[in-house]
Length: 498
Image (tube, rainbow, N blue to C red):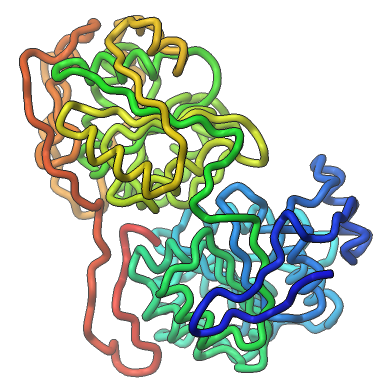
């Protein structure tokens, strides 16, 4: 029997966990309508994941739901399928500017992936799902809202713009879902989230899904999820069973070579994490200089550029993606079997968010952290706080240990010359071109990962010892304390993330 005890202000409530939840074998048994079950089967999804099995029934019954589950566990369908089913049962049509349901997410990439996922199941129910995110035309979104939207998937910053402009009203929202609530807290979105939730009906259904339930997330729960039921797939610090964690100790001057050998591995997708935008560009340039088809993803790129980069990564044209934490929070791509921490994460939660890009939906995955001598202690502390079992290994370029863990091999050394056009953010000053031909690597000044470029291509390591720059967060959200003329008051534009 499901334990539906609410979360108390003082402590976590008793919860339904994967160990004690009733076993459910089909989506039909959970109460989803036949068209949705058929659409799921067409995509090869026939068995609910643990969080889906636990949460869908309560969500279909209209209860407020608090779900705790790691990334890749199927949270989107856990709240999305009941949301679509309930809207179809109500049988109404959306009024102009007034969506019937709202999904709040922290990043643009996650918004688009939620839309893509839910549209498959909304279509047979004759429902519409539309995004409202920054970096895409405001007018087009306003037109869609005027025509009527059943489910609006939005980032807090852009939704705040629509609320201030009067192009979106939340009076008719009867179901609200917050996805990746802990990430929204980490990115400073909670003031906007509180104001947005305050504009929805107090008696509407609300669902909040998060990998962790920190103090800030619990403050949202106490205020906006009365009489909720809580479901958890397990300890938020527990590592995914099919995920292996390694700390790879490298010597000074060897980091670039080790990274290039890891990136040259055959098969699978690799995602590498840097702390800053410049760090991403520098790593990408150096990898391409020795023959690696790599691209960068960060908040300095326009949304259409980010979308194209992510599409090439998904379809395998680009096997290596170098990303910042902010840009990568919404990357939910199956088939990523190697995650590389090039720079140490800011904290243990960022470590787990990065690691969660692999071992999705039960697949196997490997997570490695590259550690220079002065970084080993901090990385060891972060993995301990994350609660993961980690193996520490000394590696060097060409070592058997490096190859066994990551599949590393020597790159071709032939520079990748068909590089995508260097993407320049709107309004940014133009850089001087590389007259005279040949590859000239860009140094990542001020970034977390600084190294010398492999000038002229070839397979060259860094010359001599150097010190890594002190890590810092990428693109911290900017705050705007103005009231923007009354009405909805957003404290941040978050232009780089949503």
